[in-house]
Length: 383
Ligand SMILES: Cc1cc2nc3c(=O)[nH]c(=O)nc-3n(C[C@H](O)[C@H](O)[C@H](O)COP(=O)(O)OP(=O)(O)OC[C@H]3O[C@@H](n4cnc5c(N)ncnc54)[C@H](O)[C@@H]3O)c2cc1C
Image 1 (cartoon, rainbow, N blue to C red):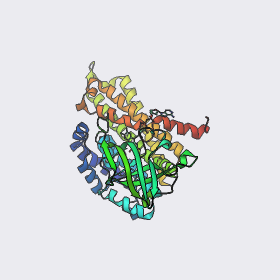
Image 2: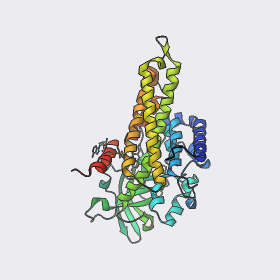
Image 3: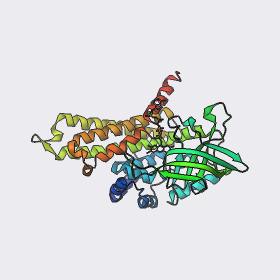
Image 4: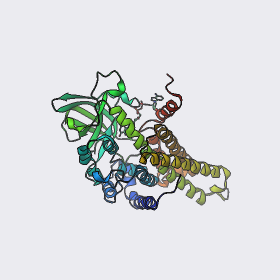
């Protein structure tokens, strides 16, 4: 087994780091403070080829792997999670289109994302169906050649800025198996009856747009259905096997950024006549943070490598997702602790990791749900 990055991957990492370190500081404070999506930054990210690297050449992308996509995300989140998410989540949903869409759908929806001409989202969560994805109640009813969609979606990333959104809808309500009732339909956001209400006051990742969606008799041609009717739940689960690996990289990046702040601090601040790094308690903190980050990085590289070799290991992905998310929260907390009162101040830049990291234990499956997936894979269903 080869754990080394190729020269091309090393170049991608270096370029992503240079871009994030050079550009993010121009946007991160303002977008965090005012909850504004950094549109110009996203455009630059597209121009430089960082967005949608997993999209195949025939659909307008460079045709790299999910590992390369994750490596970019790690570098972006290391500098600033909010900006990193805003730039890269513009393709959130493209993975599903690439996996299950028709040739025509892939050509229509994927290339504009790479070119910086469109932003995408995915609407799964509803006010009454969060962790219980199969409980989604938004309906899509056939009327001639169109679906008529009605329902509400909650917490949708890019909801108020997206050009199109994958919507999980019930199309087969008569089906006894609740996991076979849904389909995925792409809804263009300029259709009549589509409304987005931006959610404000988030704890972290405030640069990223999050919205509540209302769909009232939205008419969509039936050609917008992705994959097979009744397979929407399964398709989204496969989509999450891909995107959760990306979330792991986000977590490792945020943790790495917070660790680097802690290292710099223990080497520069003195108490009791010694650098903070001379105290064993702080040395142990640094050692534990670094060890967990390495373990997480190895875990997500392996999960990404498997994906790029055509293997979806949902158990491994779920393990990686909860462990990486928890590690990011742990490291951000420890880094803030090492900074003492200074960590509590915005200008030291550590409280932001603390706020931003928390989402990694919640979105794309709360960590308890990931543990249920792991336990079921090991024990089978026990009730
Ligand atoms: C900033 C942000 C961005 C998001 N982006 C998107 C997006 O783009 N698209 C989208 O569709 N959704 C998105 N989400 C929604 C996100 O995926 C959900 O918030 C998440 O799945 C949890 O659902 P919930 O909030 O309804 O919590 P609930 O399902 O109500 O769960 C609440 C708590 O109970 C625990 N819990 C629930 N069920 C169980 C169980 N069976 N066993 C043990 N514990 C359980 C959970 O772990 C959680 O901690 C986003 C959320 C946020 C905050």
